[in-house]
Length: 213
Image 1 (spheres, rainbow, N blue to C red):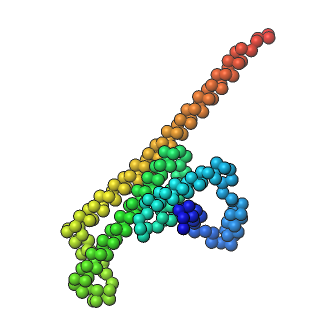
Image 2 (cartoon, rainbow, N blue to C red):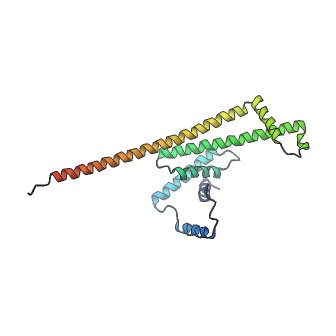
Image 3 (tube, rainbow, N blue to C red):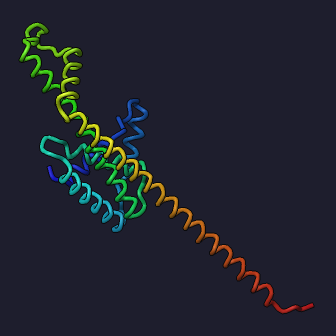
């Protein structure tokens, strides 16, 4: 499946929606789908195509072998749907947030893999697999954690990188909010300036009217 098709599929499925569950909801959803055709203007279509291309390129560069590009696209789409970036800078910050969270989720997977690998090593060395019918107990994971924490820097590095990616996510979110607030304030100042200019024009016009009394 091409990157563009993956993006379209991810957006169609949605990250939050589970679909209507009642008969009335299904009928309403069908009616909405029939009435919605997506962007109809050339500008809207071009923007959607550009977004899909950008998402696909970013997903291709971020998803490692065995990771889901669809899932990354869904994550990015969910953030964009929630934050609704209005400028290129805001879009960049949303993408940074998606990348940071994706890398953070990868670390969670790596942590799980480390636990499992270490637990299996201990089970193979002690023969606990046979005693527990192949089930890894919480005690075995606890011993695995102690071994990883005491004898390896793996857990320390995972925690360090998780902190780094969490900070990147929060910095990007803060930058997004700051940029949006600045734009809103600039818009308000422009509106006040136009309003004051209009009021001044009206005042001058009234003053220039001849006195017919």
